[in-house]
Figure (cartoon, rainbow, N blue to C red):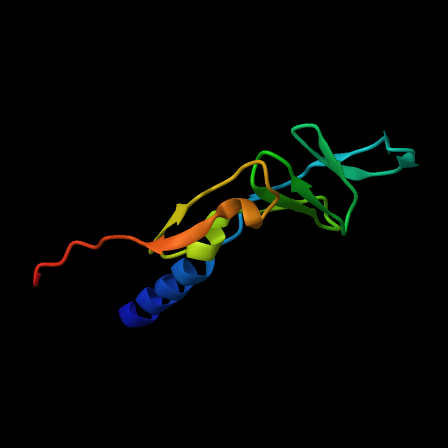
Length: 112
C-alpha cells in the first residue's frame, strides 16, 4: 500500500511538475480592433479563444483557451531539466527566436 501511494505521488510530480504556466479566469467582454465578444485579458493583452499572441519584448507566446485560460509559452519550457544556459537572448525578436541559443551548463563532478 505504501509503495502504491509513493508511486502515485511520483507520477503526479512528473505530470504536474513541468506544466505550462497558466492564468485562469481571464474572461472579459468588449471590442478588440473592431471585433466584439468575450475574450481573454491578461495585463492589457486581449486574445480571442483559440488564438495566439506573440508578446513583443516579453519573449513569450500566449494562447487563449475556450475556457478563457491563458497558457504561456516561454524559453524555459525548452529546458525543463535546467540543463542549458541561453546565450544571445534578444527581446527585440518574437518567441522562440528571442530565446537565443542553448549552451550546456558546466556541471560539478566529483570525478574530475
